[in-house]
Image (cartoon, rainbow, N blue to C red; front, side):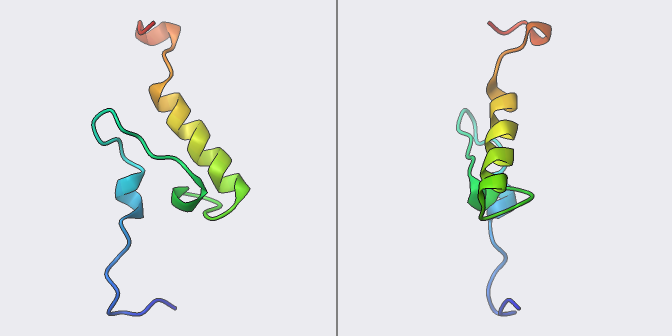
Length: 59
């Protein structure tokens, strides 16, 4: 159990884009945090956010 005196972690804010900077990794994953499954989930999510697709017209 977390210490009530400890402020909440900034993890949800790290999942959000910060200008052109994006963070990805197992420690900030929304599911499977701390493991390889979380790292894959986080990396996939971030790649989808930045990768151009034919539908959005970015090339």
